[in-house]
Image (cartoon, rainbow, N blue to C red):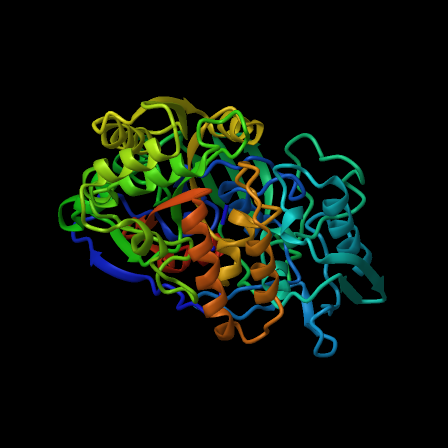
Length: 519
């Protein structure tokens, strides 16, 4: 689900300002009580932070829970949130200690203690949900709490540990309301973030009200926010044009963001160079049609990213030839260097399959999350592969929950998966995607890649890891456990009565609803 390293954080720039307003101004005395409505297609998978590692869940966690650290807009350096101070003890990068702010409370008025922090991490690691964030902390051995101090003891060096604490994986819960050994059912939340959750209908809406007990790095919000969930981008676009939402973010249809004209339609659109990437993931299980490396390599030869960019996404994405996107330390063009030779790609792919004694055509199942754009992308992939006569592709569309269950169980030979990074470090494009505890469900493991990933985690100066990350990507280009397709640009639509939308998201996985306000 998720976002960086010593990369260059995207700067969100307002492109165009709307002229005539399509939404009416309301009296000032209504502004504080009337919720700001925000539309999105990123539905939350779960409300228990030990059980979700997807973009929609983490977006809402950013507002309902606190972490010890957080990221300010436009910065890659973590700053204290629930913590007063944090830092490594000694140069080994194996012991990390934080001191809590004084007087912290959960939204229900219960005091937050170091024991709540310890419990939150121990519980997450103990439950180790298949869809949870425990895999982000393979080096975490134990957590101790004493007074206001929390100490994390690591099994190995991990320079990225502070960045991981700044994600929703570090969400702190009220230990009196969450069972120790199981995920919490229902729709109640007990956190200490800027908002409280007062109403929630899964997949439909979430009503957030300012938390009067909040103390941390974010500004204290003054206005409620209603998050409205839409099944696909077309529905979100319709809601925007009807004036049902004040802000629309993720995932608007490409044809809308590519041609949106505020002078005609009103509102304001902002664009940022995003770090979300899209890949085709190949199932590596022995029974899969993609278990043979030569089959995956042949697809890498054939796929035309340029047509996907222009025909499906209307140039709202950029072709990507590596795991690590542009503007991030370690970015390279390993897939272009390996597979783009300017020759007859069909002839070369056919030769690769025949030399490996792979029967032609290769028949396989490709799955994607339900949605118009995902469906169009799948059809374009099928068109490209089937016109060669080398492949036959069956497309399966599933709602997010069932899609996720399917790829974890090995139900598909290949599937489209987007990755919005969790924190600003190139490690977050390698460990979760191709490391030995990866989250993509394809069972891939490579001992050399794992060693290289571990080596990068030993350097506190992240600029020194660039060469190693390039080596990792070279290895991945040869193995092709997944195929990078594109890097997304970030778009936010906001009505002319709204301010702060340019700070809503900056690719760090934090959804800053508290930045929104009426003007």
